[in-house]
Amino acid sequence: MNHSELAAYLKSRRARIRPTEVGLPVGPRRRVPGLRREEVAQLAGLSADYYTELERGRGAQPSVQVLAALARALRLNGDERDHLFHLADRPVPPAAHGPTAHVQPALLGLLDRLTTTPAQVITDLHETVVQNELAVALVGRHPAVRGPAASFVYRWFTEPEARAVYPAEDHPHHSRVFVADLQAVAARRGADSEVHQMVAALRRHSEEFTVLWDTHDVALRRTDHKRIAHPTLGVIELDCHSLFSEDGRQRLLWFTAPPGSEGAAQLELLSVIGTQDLSPDPTASEQRSA
Image 1 (cartoon, rainbow, N blue to C red):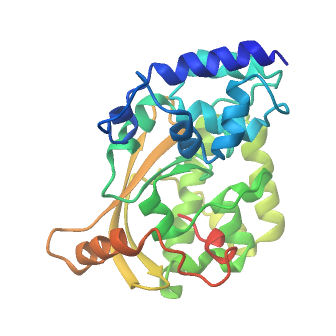
Image 2: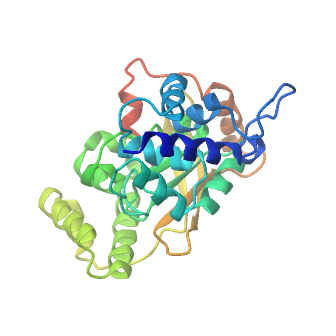
Image 3: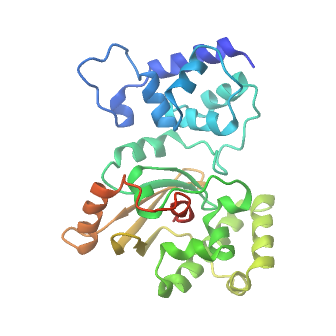
């Protein structure tokens, strides 16, 4: 690992980003042209001390998860992100898959601007990559797991507690939508081992999935009407919209409600209480995702 080159690269990428580009206030006393170190740390979910050590060319080799978070925080494009991984002497993971997937800058830029709307970026296998704070408040923070369980579709059919995000009477609808969407993804990806392994595992573990898969219904989920079972606000009726990346392997999801509706009022209240930890068990909120 080249500590000095990594440090210099992080500094150069930090200096080129304006606070307004990532939803941060400029402030009257800003003395640096780009982001402050603590702001990068905040965006990446790291401690300020840890990030400062990286910029000073010290500390242990950063993990793949840390590098992926830094690539998002610094709004790196694909080539810049790969260079970051090379400087840290880490293998570059696939660009569009899994929890460490690199979010396309265009989707991330839109997510930055959705400050009053719950929104998140997921992969085509429903692995949550990044969420804004309102999305965390609405559907919970995605669990820090890898492998098949990183996919909400996989957890939906294998972990009963994952279904708590929706009222029980809506579960059959969501099961059908998830399976039809996965059919479309599998067809588009073709001979992709990741998809085939997930489908095989779901067929082994879920009779419900197997029955639905064998109907061969195919439909990408572009929009959907959802009822979210929120632990404090009750059932919130929302519309879920999807914007697909150019290659179709990532999606920006955002949730809206008609003006004047009860759902709109609940979203406004969510923006007030959303940053509070409403669960007595810190791990409970991690079981919910959309």
